Length: 285
Image (tube, rainbow, N blue to C red; front, side, top):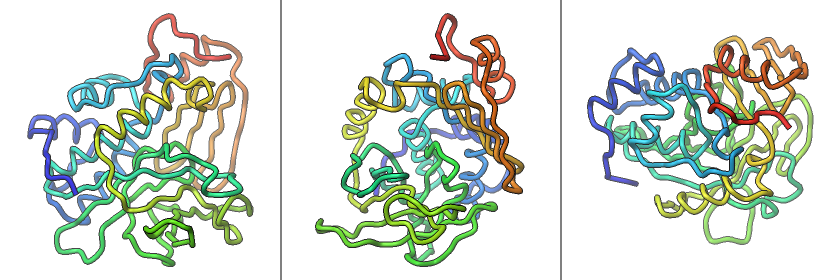
């Protein structure tokens, strides 16, 4: 777990104001859950930098400028690097993890480790928590969950569980599953859909700098191909993928439509997601 604190009290003030968290600032499970949920609802997921084949900075000052003080969001490395630093400033101990996104995959090993997640130690709690505010999918955690296999967790209305699966490596392999309506993908069990797989091996900033650059600049990366923006609140999950806008309500109903043009895309980004795209940037294929 990291002992490096990179955010100061003034950063905490601005960050917590950005996500709308007015609760306690203690290193306990209540604060961890509250800040995690507020972050998910307060800062959108978006890939505008990667869409321009530019690797976003993971430096604390740049994350504060972009995700907190600016009208932008980010993707997993930005969101989780920011949250990790904030949690450390609050007194938590945090381990940075990498994961293989396995939604729709035939085998876990067929996907590279391109996702970032966090393992958070809570003083006085017997188990660490899996935390992740940067998974750009409807199967994402809304609140952190204890690292406990086989137990269903209901996090702000979503249903998740962690399982361990056999694999040839020396470390235990964990899989985060989300409850869905259809069977499919690797390690699925009825309606439980595998989201990503990870071990507890710690990764360092230098590792994420390389992974971040690869995902943001590789022409085969899904984040360099088309626009991907999402936001979530208590009532709905909103996803813009290329030209398609999908709204999933809390009651399970889904509405989908296709955007007409760049003007509508830019207006939607600003109005619904709170994201201002750089001037002159082409948003749609």
